[in-house]
Image 1 (spheres, rainbow, N blue to C red):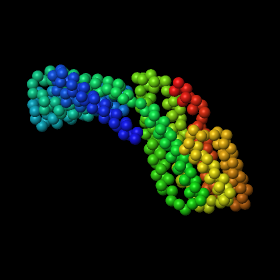
Image 2: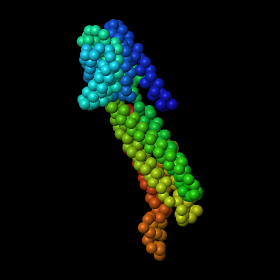
Image 3: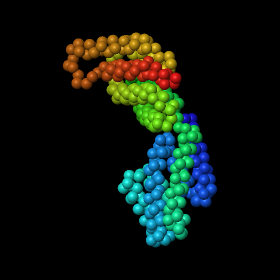
Length: 348
């Protein structure tokens, strides 16, 4: 649903920009095709990107137009004209680091060969005018029509990642404790999807921060963005430790049934915290962590007190409990009251 809404707004804005651009160009008596091409590619995910890339696309389009006029003057409407205009535009834009405008400039250069027959200099300035119209109209539409706002998407995405991580955590430990021979390939795929979702959310935060210079309401929510970044970092670390759990050898785990039940109870409570953030209880969280920590030290003592030669690798029980304690600490930081307070203050 989120993706559809985002793409839908981009489609509507692109359509409005095309209509307004074509209308203005026709009012001036200029061919609208070049302006429309520019308007289409200038609708970026953020207004800031539209402005930044627009400042690159204008000189790039000017270069493409200039090469088109130059080679038409030399060779007329011939195959070599299309070739030289395109190649020269690509080389010049690449050399000048105008990569964001390279495609538009090349299309403009090639398209101009077909429509210019005389008055080459006037045609060149008309192309600059139509490009300017396309840039200005599309940027204005992007700013005023459905202004980019990723706040809701960011918060929903973080909540979704948290819920999926909680479900995976519970499933992974249930498999480790009670079904050691099971295939964890599905869990590994879930970890990969979590990583992808985290990357997408990081990009949304980047988009939202880019708008801070243009929209005061974005600047006023800087504390909320910082909180979202911290939570996303904790989720990324959580994903790392979940992946580490999936790599622990599950054979020869020597926990008793009571110990397995104790661990599973703690994991279930932890997973519920991740799935239902509003019901997070710090005191209950610390109580469960104390039980797991005590079990961790008991296991450590049993290893050091063993008459057998000390192993070169940690026993799987040791590693699993260490990862679980680390995850408990991450979840506690994820629900840091200071972060929640900062978010609420940002909404005022």
